[in-house]
Image 1 (cartoon, rainbow, N blue to C red):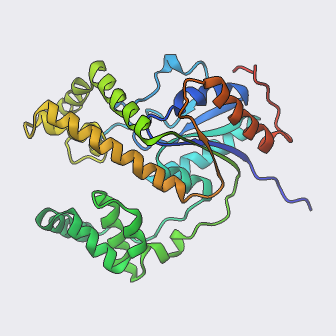
Image 2 (tube, rainbow, N blue to C red; image 1 turned 180 degrees about the vertical axis):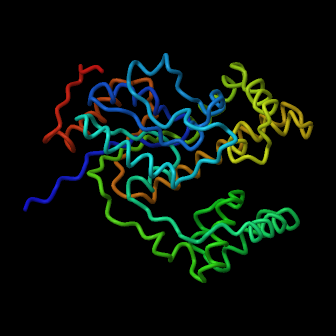
Length: 326
């Protein structure tokens, strides 16, 4: 019996502001693809400017999935993303189209591409409250140090400010006496998909300049008003959605904790650091073919390189044309 072929899945990843959106539209048209957003924040309705969410009018008729599927008050998890992503890959493939994951949330993308299993350790609200209190009293570094004592591998990949995931790793260790990094849930199985992973990168200083320019554009487009509107609708600063970049910093300004200028300086700094962490995460993923788009003005050349990679990987059995439209 012939082994059933794995579904083909295309992935375009890279740090924030590197230029994924424009390239993704051109690629999707060329390869008859539907886009699955690999962004943990674009799922939230009403959070458009701060997430750099593509507008419907900009989608050029290409189907986009996992955008605007949750209210900000509803938590969204990597497990839900994985489940929805699997369903979409099946449905898009069944239509004879190419599933195309585009985004910058490394954990989400990797979990879908490699079928991570998640720990069955249940939520222990009392333990979480205790750890939150510890972090408030002793600081983020002290909480991170507690994780490093019992699970150095997880501590090495988690930023000290990523309190939610640090507490979850501590919670798993507390319940199972096994570090998250050594649990069966952490083992990376063989991918259930025939993957083509393309990563975009550019000179770090140019990327940082693009990040700062994007934030200036967000402010001009009404980021402060967007955050104020969310808070007026009852979106508290403790929500997972409101912990996103751009939202927590502006909320601190609106809460009277700092000036607007101070919040923008903080936002730009945090976003630069976030981009650095994104690249660090992607660097440990295997099989990514990297394209340096530092000369991003030469869009045609960058697209030609990417087109050649995808065609070389998926040409057999995949009908496509660079002129194909939806």
